Length: 328
Image (cartoon, rainbow, N blue to C red; front, side, top):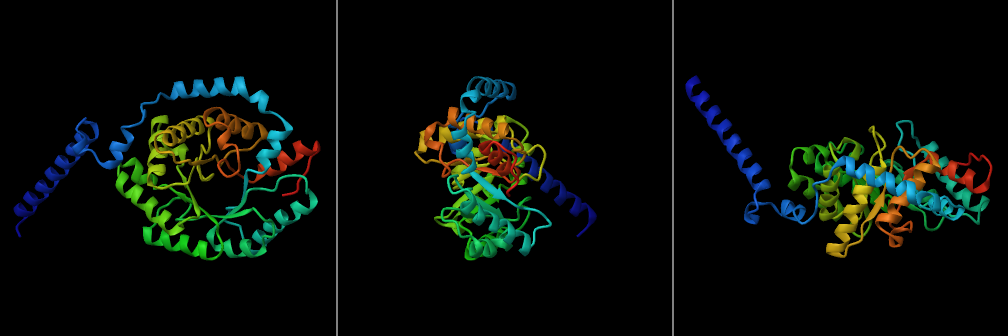
């Protein structure tokens, strides 16, 4: 094949790519439903044209007006029972994870009148240790799976890792949305991956992490939330805690609005989990207030509202007991 022929073929391929891109852009913006993908048709049913400044103003108004009434002992006890006590460190080991689990066991004996944490969250390689050592009834074993925290792996790797975590005793799974697929507009692959991983999980709850700090706008947070729920998420979660910024009240507000609208249209209740950067009791109260005001009392149980954190447990315990305590 001559160089001229190769050049001609290269030009044809480039022209084809240009035509495909133009068609995709047209299909995304046209009102002709026959040209839209099922994902774009789903998104078109919702208001996704959000302004970041308006979202920030709404959050500020909710927090200023409603947070003081939630700053109570009862709410702080509830928040303790919603914590997903998390250790996802490079320095984790069999010994440290076992000690981590034993502290949860000891907590119930030490403070029998206080709610225990909702879950222990670890890497899949520690699922067996936690599930075998955990003695407290009602505490779930969560594994951050699917090539956490980047999600950059073959889907076959993600499904096998998730299946092994469940086999070793995980009762819930957290996965990360394929952010690169979302940002490039490949909603089909994004949703296919979530669907495949949910199929592996079966009736076990699966949370989809959006990594909201890396999404460009409130509109993107809304779209990513809707796509994750549409693909089968049982929960949507803000962040891995490995990127900055992590959870923000603004992202939480948008995600809760998406959950509310999705529930209104489908009747399917989806849980919410802020995670990453929840460093103070006040932070936790902010997220509680947003959930209460946007989603309502139906979501104020630890089956539908969780907090992904580790440091918060001691802070809440200290406030409840009225003295500084470093138990966990």
